[in-house]
Length: 275
Picture 1: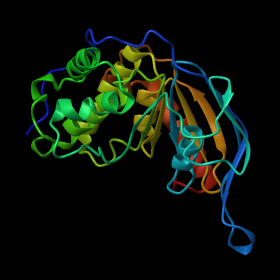
Picture 2: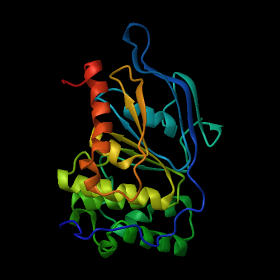
Picture 3: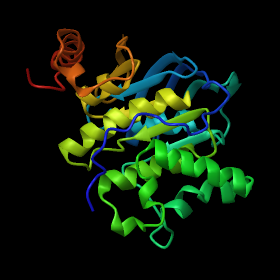
Picture 4: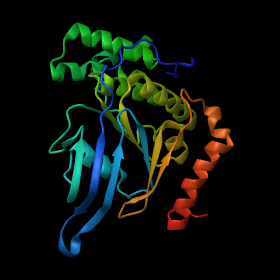
């Protein structure tokens, strides 16, 4: 089944009334193992993400990007340092968080609407309100016509749209995306980049995108964190001030190219990219 061919802008899906949540990291490190077998995944990292900000983390394979995301999400504990979300130390898995992974993890025996409604069932949300929210999100993401279809009937890009809708259903103040588009073809990935920055703006959710793609990192984000090879640390912190909504033609501008070049040059200097 092919992708919907129309250009979807955010529609009237009810957006969260709360702003996104602040994320603060203070000298956070992560070491796996001990003694001679110890592997330092992250060197000290200190950074603050503002409420509602869209932040991309880009870096070479194995630099600790996904580890950083798991630490903030409370899925792992840091070896040292402090992580605060909404002003509170992270002591376990965050509840006010939607996550989208590289694999969509949709349930094959549930149709699209049933998959999107799964968080409502788990959290005990009011069914009628949850269905209205789900319908709005599916429309916002351009897959409302496929609410009764099953995952195996959808393309990869459409499945990821459903996964994003599921993550956003409970109106979280945080959304984390771990390489969500890396398995998609180039054209579909471009479509998803356009859609993601539209949805992020409409939902006012603090967003953390993990990616290997420099183009994707710059296009989607308000800010790009550039990480070094292992042990991962921050090489650069770049503000991306282009207005929204953004179109793919932005990537052809000198201003966009300058940011991409700045990131590439960081990786060339560290030997993570051949110049």
